[in-house]
Image (cartoon, rainbow, N blue to C red):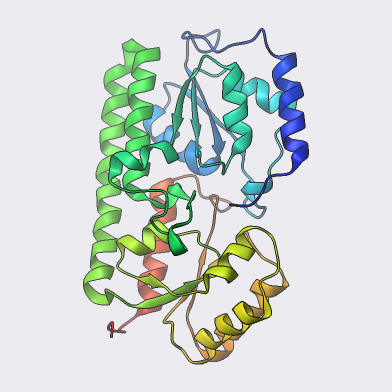
Length: 309
């Protein structure tokens, strides 16, 4: 997990003091419509699928190119969280600004990372050497559970539309089941196939697909923390590509620097298929299912007819 800037903590601390008298209410907006605030547009897409037109959903981070780890919330952002009826955060210190902001709120808080244990995972799944992997929006089971939790929370805030919220959550989970079926198909064809990520972004998804991320742990950890990997880790990563030990490079387009660009060039030169994954929804995409389905299909196409060995 990248270390967030100290300025973020200071800003949120000041915001919390200024807003100490504010809190969310069960009545939502003045119109009676519940309000949901999420950290990123990934989680707002999940919440919106459940809310439909019966609640207002907004996200604080919507940039399709920047790095969500480095987002700094403003006082206005903190106020929006404080005044919400339901808050959805990633947790695991991925969006630490949300963890701080909800301390001054009476909103129902749904922490996706905290749901890992209930889905039979621990924090190290999908991450090299058992380190914490906070990218739980790539854990489809957890995403489905978040949708269920959002449905229940909105039903509590707005009982008149409870059936709609829970029906929408169920429909979303049926689509999640469809995505998991796509991963099962990949696993059936490619179980044990080696791939490499530039950052441990999609670890949970790759695990479910039966793929093994063999990128050097030191390399991916350095990229995640915004640091330069060691010469040894860079050489090891380059060797995986030049030798075609891996059958796909999973490239995080929102954690890019000269090192990752060099890795991308090496993969392309060596003929290793590149699959571009993102941390937030790309421009023009508002639907979580469509986003992940596209990425899963790209992954499957990259692996092609290769059989694990």
